[in-house]
Image 1 (tube, rainbow, N blue to C red):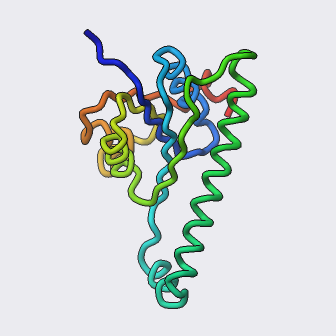
Image 2: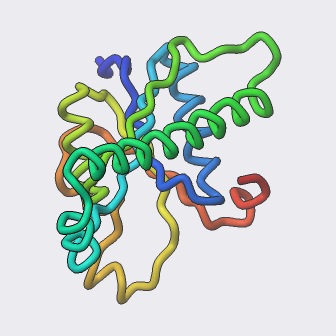
Length: 168
């Protein structure tokens, strides 16, 4: 028997061209009556920039700045989701559950795997942009790193094909 999909973790870099992957997450949510949790991972500041902020901003101001930064991403994502639903779902069709949005700081692959485990995701949906063979060999893609570090099924949607690039 196939496992029941109740929770879908959708991981996005929210760049133009990522709509086909979200479309797939929405299709799966509708098909399985599942909830989507939208994860966006932001690389942490490091090096001189992080040191300068720590040295010159009081801790409370730094926390407030970080929270404002994360909230601005949540607002952009909320607007993008609503735009997608208004434009692409047939009238009267709704997702079975409201989409939860989480903007987290950390290396994307680690954030995705940790979040999927913590949130008991049944499926991870993410896009994959084509990259050079050399960059994949030496650096790996986020999707490849997620595949190698999770036991949760991963649905990867190619993002750079002509078919997918019609609408962001």
